[in-house]
Length: 507
Ligand code: BES
Ligand code: ZN
Ligand code: ZN
Image (cartoon, rainbow, N blue to C red; front, side, top):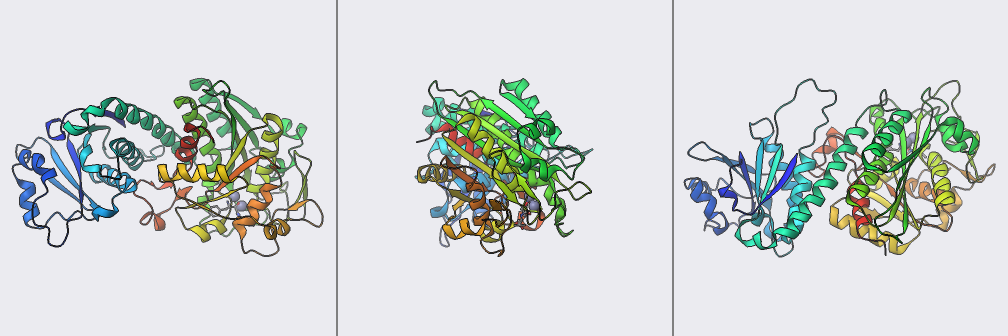
């Protein structure tokens, strides 16, 4: 999808469809909204007639189509819901719904009337970004395995109109920046959606090498031999049951500022999580092809960071392995020696994410001394039970970092909720046999004990952990309830959030 800006009023453009936002009309609201007068004129008074009939009500997810009497173009009135509740997230959803309403309906170009998506709380620049987010993300489809597909919107124009035309330069910059960011998010979804028969740890390494060629990001791949030399017994243990050996992938973006900070972004990259010897039940197991979502998000963040030339140096780390049962698998009872020297008593081979992350965190901190570490992982089912399908858990040992990530979350709409780690959880992950155990005696607080486990491998480094098990992917039963711009399958959750954080230099 391509995005452009046009100074004119939407009705003057020559797009296949124009989308205008309409807040929900009050019970006794009879006067036709003045904001739609121009469109009403261009559409032969069809809008005001529909208003009279109470056909358009502005309810959320309501999209009504009008055709120009001369047959050249159509107008989509998209409901925004109660006026006092219209916010940035409403605009993202409305943009996604516009694009979806036009799918397979012969519209290749779509224009948004910017002024219908702004209000006292949503400045023009914020609305422009939200329209790009919603249309770009909402229009996404994973087509790798489809031999045919329906036509969809390919070009989106944001019409400024008289009011906003004065701000053209900053709005153009916002549009271009957001387009670049969204492009990386969709690229990430295309990788994260690939199933495990193809998306092996080595295949993910190839994607990283491809990124290096196109962007100048430095990529280093450690294979199983090198990992053995590096004493990375955690990732090797998890990957030992698969014929596709593990890879630790390092990406380095040098940073746009000369004396910038170094931020490490680490991701769980389990290409398939069967549970291993502690086998998962069959139901829903196919979703475990998305257990690499954290590592894919890291790839997307580094790509976007390089494209947008963010100030800090960024070190991406993807901890990739496949968790399968087999004659050479690691097993419950095994004790693994990790890169930092700390040992892990394995009590459940399905708690493998924290095990691969132990090596990744230990390595990146020892080698690069980052100022901050942020990890992303589809780590625990417990986090999904706690926060539902669309909110990520945030655990951090640094108040300022946590607050900055919450700020970024408010900007991008990727929902995050802070969760605690206390001495109770720290006690629960201590092992009798080794240093830490990967699974606890009692199951309650599973997202928190997982974070307490990871804490052992970050020492005093400023660190934030995002458990994205809920919002990392989106399956049919939950699709109705999560934002309209969450597509089916991998969402690439975290790419916009962490990139937005990197764009505003860490405090
Ligand atoms: N990949 C799963 C977590 C997960 C569950 C992600 C549901 C997305 C949706 C993880 O490796 C796992 O299996 N965790 C176990 C940990 C337990 C054995 C301590 C869990 O959450 O049950
Ligand atoms: Zn698991
Ligand atoms: Zn897993």
